[in-house]
Length: 275
Image 1 (cartoon, rainbow, N blue to C red):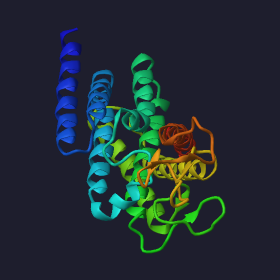
Image 2: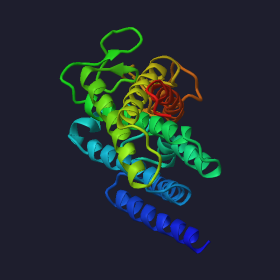
Image 3: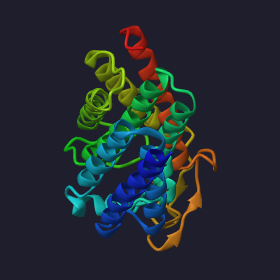
Image 4: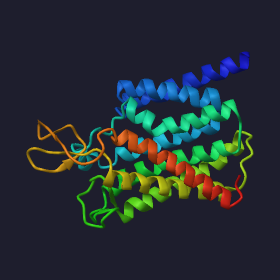
């Protein structure tokens, strides 16, 4: 019992240190700090270094990429409902599905939970990497639905650079997951199966995110320039309701994509005998 309490306390201390540093670096808002603190505590307290390490890997790499050529991205962020400084909704949308798998594994340990977790975290990593690096591509993105050219950062767009970044992010999560599982004393299976789960899950989830963004995600229209944007305000004026389902905001898209990425990762691992 004492060891369990110490484990939760250690997780809380680590989560507080990381989230506070991110808040200081302006990667998190205050609500994002609180959500990250709770999430990190659960990831370590109910899980172990495997679960917490993957969360940390996603957060650190994503935060570093968001700072790359921030001046260029600042203009694009004006179209988004939220900026690179993550709030509680963004934190939960990116790590909430993974936290459910952590808790499920703590309640009833099964081999499927870590694989589903890898798929969820590979999705959010792949999608974030694709967004952060894809917006820097010299070639404009194309709609995943129609193939027409879109402006950089527009919802539903994909590019070769962004797709390569998504693949790299997903593969990293899968390979790192295998290493962390080994270090945590878990039955990790094969590196190939875990890497494939991360790669397939990440790509499937990232493309699902783009497809949802191109079809049903709630989008607004600027009353001044007529541009389709996520933001509630553009050019200093309230935007007008546009296409999509009103409840399907960017956070909902991220959560649904994570579930789809998890399913794809599980299928890939099963085909390769990884579970």
